[in-house]
Image 1 (cartoon, rainbow, N blue to C red):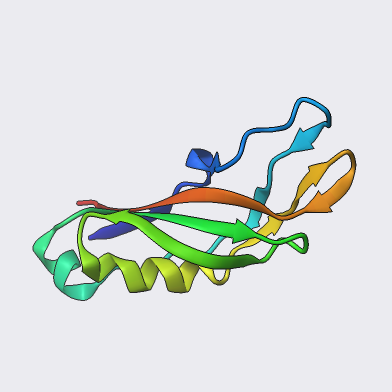
Image 2: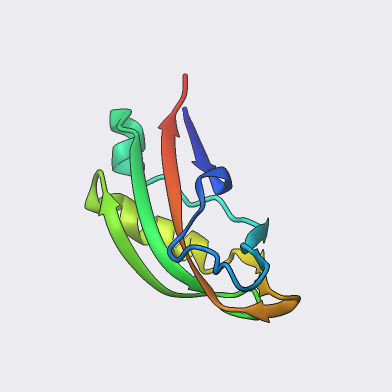
Amino acid sequence: MKAVLPLALGLALAAPARADGKFEPAVPVRTSAPEFPPALDQAGIPGLVLVDCLVDARGNVQDMQVEKTTDPQFVQPALAALKKWKFKPAERDGNRVSSRVSIPIRFTVSG
């Protein structure tokens, strides 16, 4: 009955690229779908969690902060899944750097 869709396409940089250097944003290379909360799945309730986080220079997700959610029950599964994500780190002038991104995690009911 459920489909959980982490949308990497909706990533947004928290800081714009600087004019004095070439900037390549962080790109997810491994994602993990969160578990749909059973009560919300049974009720057929879709959801969204928008998480602001730091992607460090090694491509690991750190310092996660929930920006908004449609239901608090979606938060823990979304954060647990994001801990498993891996990124190609952002680069500035060919050097790996940390960057902030906003990641939307959508919980979609199907069927």
